[in-house]
Length: 259
Ligand SMILES: C[S@@+](CC[C@H](N)C(=O)[O-])C[C@H]1O[C@@H](n2cnc3c(N)ncnc32)[C@H](O)[C@@H]1O
Image 1: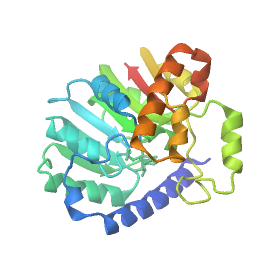
Image 2: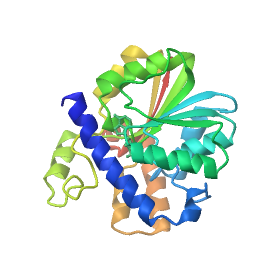
Image 3: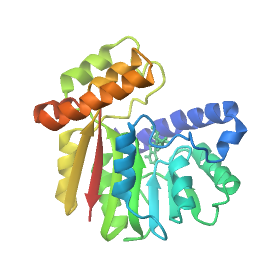
Image 4: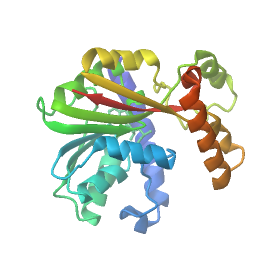
């Protein structure tokens, strides 16, 4: 799809989402809270892995791609990182600017509305680039190169993304009468990552590490119990560790790229 058309669709969808969220949010939640939306939907061990792969953020120059409501950017700024957060949605950017002030991190967190495929930052401007549930909205043939360009030598990128290697499963999902696109929850431009997208990153970066997760935990939508979710997570870890062939069916992946 043509790049500008893709940006238009993403901007419209996420501006609408930002407005809807802001109109109903409890104002106290604008301040970073314990239950904030960090790495939404990831099991605890994946959140820990993501944070560990980012390393010590104190005084680091950090870029978040597709920051949305900005919870993680605010947290990293509170930990002493110098964070730049970008998003295609100007309404999310306005929200993050306001939240940065409310959280007292406006000197450590700057926000800009810009597409991840055309970053205006200089070469090697960052020690760390990260994103949560965002690369699959972007044109990957451009964004891996942009991430490489803005990272300093030895810098790293950490991302969590949906995975869709099994094309039959993906096709069946698209046929459902209640598909997420039809319900207006997903954009028609977004596409779960596949192994070929990761291989493309391997052609660019020194090292790429991938950790797939989530398998049976898809079923937690049927029974919304935290205990059930915990059991499914434990089974998933065992299955994905011991049966490599099952990894293609994983729900999502954490990706570490090193320049
Ligand atoms: C699924 S949301 C994730 C938001 C946030 N990272 C989180 O985990 O809550 C995807 C985000 O990517 C942004 N986005 C979509 N296309 C983009 C692009 N080309 N450049 C920058 N941001 C983009 C959207 O506006 C949205 O905020």
